[in-house]
Length: 530
Image (cartoon, helix red, strand yellow):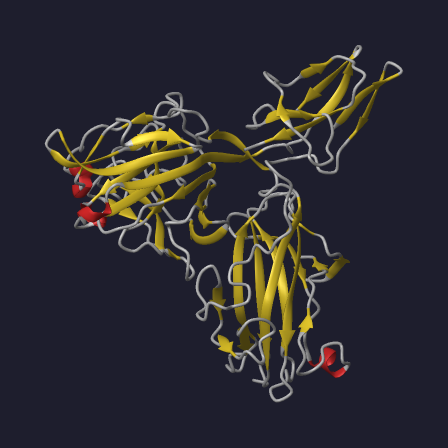
C-alpha cells in the first residue's frame, strides 16, 4: 500500500504484490517425483487399480529416463487405474496444472478406453469441493489428430466440472481452491471399458504450480515461535526434568535438563542437544520442552520445521498431549504424535494417535509411515505438519499428505465397551512437546559415537483459518487509519520505494488500528507474517 499527501488529501493505491505471508508465491512445481525418475512408485504418489508402472527408456521418455505407463484392468467391467498425489492447500490458493501424455502407435488406446489429468480440491476428509480436468484422451481425439499417436502432447488442465454430475461448467487456466479446501489432489486416471479393449497411455513431466494466494490460502499463523531471539522464551516453553518413571515409560536412558548445553537458541534456531554426560546418576543428558500451561489449542495446523540428528540410539519426536486429561489417564485422553523417527533409519518417519481406555486398555493408529525419496532424509530441514479437524487428522511432510486418520475412540474406564461420545478424546486443547530421547523402546542400543547429537528447530507454528491477511485503510479526520486482522502473527513494514534495492523496515509498536499523520513524502506499507 502506497500513501502520500497531495493537496491535503490521501491518495491510496494497492500494490499487486501486497504480502499475505513472508513472500509472494513463487511459481514452481509442487509435485514430488513429477517425472517418475525415482523408479518405484511410492509416497507421495498413491496408486489405484492394477496396471500402473514406471518404465525406463531414455529414447521414449519425455524428459529424463522414466515415465508412467497405465492401462486397464481387463476385468470385464468399467474400471479405473492411475496415481494421485495430495498436497497441502487452503481457500483462495490458485494453481495451474498440466502434464505430458503419449499413446504408442503399436499400443494405441482402443474401444471406449479414456485417460485424463484431474485436479481436485478436497476438504480434510477428502470430499471433493471442486474439480478440473484436461482434455480427454480417447479414440475420437486420436482419430481427429487432436491427440496424435506416438507423439508427446502437453495436456493443460483447463476444464472446470460440476463435481455433482461431472459436466463442464467453465474453461479456465486458473484453478481456484474454494472454501473448505484442505488439500489439492493431482491425479492421473485411465478409465478402462467393459469390453477389455487394448491400449495404454504414458505420462511424464507433470506440473502443479501455485500462481497466487498465500502458501496455505487463508490459513494464517496465529501463534508461533521463530526462535529469533537470544534465549528460549519462558512465555512459550517449559521443561520436563529427570528420567520420569521407568525412563518416561519407554526405558529411555537420558536425564532431561534445562541446562544451556542441552537446549539453547542461536542464529534463529532452537538446538536440543543429546550428550554423553554423567548427570545425577545417568550417563546421558538431553532436553524435553513443552508448552503445557502456556499454550494449547484445539484444532488447526501445527507445523514444525526441523533438522534431525541421525544415528543408532536416537529417538526424536514432535508430539502433543491434552492440556487437561478430562477423559482419564493415558491414553483415554489421547496423544498425538506429529512426527517420530528412529535414528538408525533416517529415511523413514511416522505419525501416530494414541487413544482408547486408560493403560493397559489403550490402543493406537498404525501408519502408513513416510519414506523419503533417494537423497533426502530427516537430516535435512523438513516441515512436519499436522492438520487436526473435528473428525479427521492428516499428516504432511513438506506439504505432501501421507497419512489420514478418522477412526478413534475414548473410554474413561478399562471397560472399553462404555465409550465417550466421538470425537473424544481429540476434541480438547492439546499442548506441544519436542524432545530428543536416547535409547528406549524405539531408540534401541546407543552408539556413543553419535554425540553430540543436535536437533535443530527453525520454527513452530499454529495456522488457523482467518480472514485474508491484508491491509485496509480508512480516513480518520486528517489521519489515515490502517487496520489488519489482529489475530494473525504479523508485523507492519514500511519503505520509501519498492524498486530494487528497496529497504523495508519494521514499524516499531505498530498494532491495528495504526494512525498515520499526513506527510509530503511517499511511503509504502506491507504486512509480513513469518
